[in-house]
Length: 184
Image (cartoon, rainbow, N blue to C red; front, top):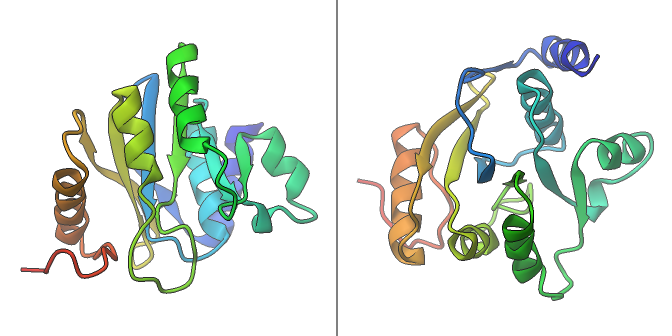
């Protein structure tokens, strides 16, 4: 039923998902850029439903409103209030240790507004849990969601952000990293 719902949603919005044959690690972090609307959540969920895998999605508490709140909570969305400083990074790193299968999707821009930088909690979680990071592109020109790369071993925040910057730049998207890297 979820596969059918995913196909209908993608048909209605005119999007497609790629990499359905991608082998996804049982413990993994997934990040997606750019984050432009609440629709991004449903496109990501469509991939998850088509692939028939479990993935938890970080979603701002502001996106949980009727009629979508119950659906989102029942389908792997985690309501997050980013203004709270409650040790969430440490808690999630422990979830990776305590579960045989745990996949987490985070949109590091953390907002749909233009911003000069990204949130790096995904990196700290993945580094502490020693898990790979899958990099996804929401390509609004091609109306396509696809995996553009995977970082298996995180080394340092600066080094790994440089790798991410290059991965996304090669696909035509510049991650807002507070002018840390230059395109070229």
